[in-house]
Image 1: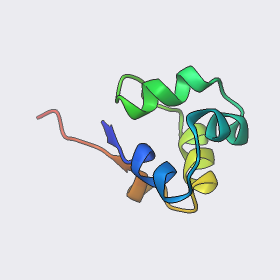
Image 2: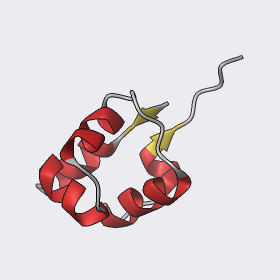
Image 3: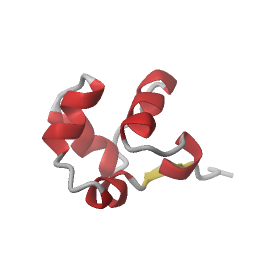
Length: 66
C-alpha cells in the first residue's frame, strides 16, 4: 500500500510529530505509514485522513497483489 501522507502534511506545513500528536500515535508510526511499511487499522486511517482534511481513498492507494 502506498500513501500520500507526506504530500498532504506538506500542504499544511505539518511535521510528523504534529500529525502523530493529532491522531494519538508515536511519530515512528507516521514514519512507517509514509514508507508503506505499516498497514493502519481502519480507525487509524480514518483519524489520519480526518487530521489532513481528506478522505481515506485520497490518502491511501491500495494496490492489488494479483
